[in-house]
Image (cartoon, rainbow, N blue to C red):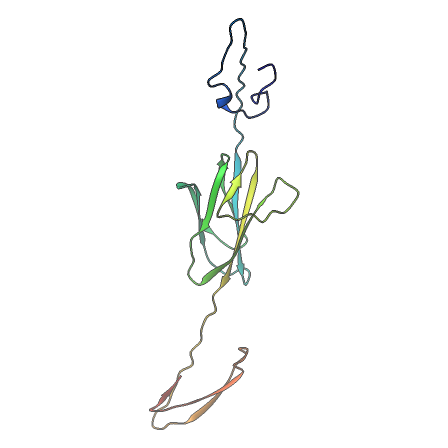
Length: 180
C-alpha cells in the first residue's frame, strides 16, 4: 500500500482493505493486522414519578435490534438500575406500561461527555466505553372520587364542601332515596 492503512495500531480497520489484494511481480507486500479488545459500555435507567415518590415498581427491557438483551424489574421512584456491560450498537430501552401512570418523559444522556444529551431511548446509539443513563418520568393518572348520598323515607338536597380544586362546594338532591 506504501502507506499506513486503516488497520494502524489503536484504530479500527476494515477487513475489506485486505481482500482482493493485488500483488504485482517483483513487489513485496507486508500486511500487519492488529487486534484489540472491544471496550464495553453501560446502559442504566433512572426512575422518576410525578408527584415525586409515588409508590410503584416499573419494568424496563433492553433490546439490540430484535434481540432481547435484558430486563430490569422493581425499579421505583428515585432508583437507578443498570443493564450492565453492553457492546457498541443501537439499542432500545423500553418501559412496560404501569397501571395508574402515564409516561411523560424519556431521555438518555451519555455520562462520559460533559454535555447533557437528550437522546431517545428508542434508538440509542452506543459506542465503546460509554456510560448511558436513561431517565424515565411517569405522571400519576388523575383519580376519581364519587360521593353517594342515600336517604331513608324522603328525598332532599344536601350540601357538601371539599378542598378539591373547582369542587369546593356542591349539592346533591336525592331522587328515590339516592344521589351521586
